[in-house]
Image 1 (spheres, one colour):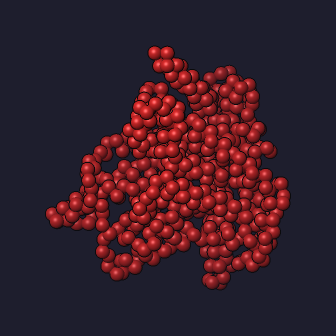
Image 2 (cartoon, helix red, strand yellow):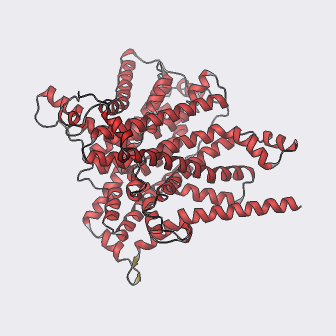
Image 3 (cartoon, one colour):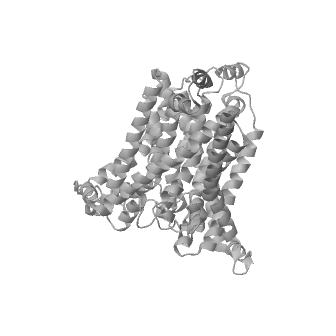
Length: 567
């Protein structure tokens, strides 16, 4: 009886500390921003909000943001779904290698990809100058800026959501149902509409939700190549830089309402589109294609692989060239190791790299300390407190990153009880905390997936043999879910290593990250150093990916086929 009461006290203490942190760093900043949007000198007022929405230029910014979100969903949906269909139905050679290449944009921070595209397709880019030379033109054939340029970058960096989710969904399409429909005279369009689409539709809706939130919250591409195409994310940073925090709060509220409304609408539609999944579905078989059609598919796939690989190759090549050659030559040819030497021999260049490594490790460690106990307790007890905690942890998923940044500014630019009487803005800790908030939904989802795959019989057997609950969790549960935890942690590490949007809002002298350093070096015409920093981040990302695959193989020995599916 005493032991049961002691366990309840421990659980109550844990949830008290947890809700203190979640309320202080997620709910309180969000409510603070909402209140500031309607706060004036005399108290509650609609003047700032009314003045903002009555300005035609501001309304155009809102329309631009919505257009960017919808355009991102359409472009990424077409490309990602087509790639998923190709990998499923055409069964290409070297399928595992192609799968890893197609996932590469997810492993590389967005700001690095944007910079690479600028160096390739910008006004003075390598590809742009090559086309001008071949066509004997004095002016660029196309302009890599504005909405087309932004959509181009987002399409080739965010299609991964559709590709991954649709690929998984296609595995659950029952091939026997496809054969039955075909035997009854249904054509290919009818089979796609009535057999395949109902199974894939939830994956499409989930991908659209994630892509829309990513599109409207995008900052790197609109900031670097947007030109006159203004969106809310860039205007928020500009308002913050000019210290117009009331206007920034209104802009944040508009962005949050836009993102949340679309998410709720898509989730409502997803719940209405129910379907029955076969208990033992027969997997789809690769389809025989005509030689001309198959050749066309292979050409399109080769083009896509080229579009994914060329930015990485471009960053690598330019990192070994001088800035003078990059800026003056069509094909930079002044090879040097000076860029890397400058990084490791200059504190000005090396410190941002060290800062990013520190803050990324802190984000992974802090996020896991919060999410692993919640995932375990919700899996073990399924109580109301764990459900509430998970709901709050998942809230940042519907908040664009710029919203989180402004929320942190509004909440912690003065001393706060949640920061133990400190003002966090301007200090080192504000960025790692923001990274943790961004990481919570991803870590929680990865941990929940790992817990769902864990066999509870193992835990019961350990306790029946006399092991304490703590020892059971330490020696049985955690090793069993380690691959899932590591997967989520590594993805968060990669994402935060190159995170740019919230960094642009919150960084200071003491915590300048590598993403900000790369952009500043571009503006200071240290392009070679910026490319070298990009190569280092890409190298770190792929090393962590290899560590993840090695850990997964050691923890769960797999056959070659199953390993390829989970790679």
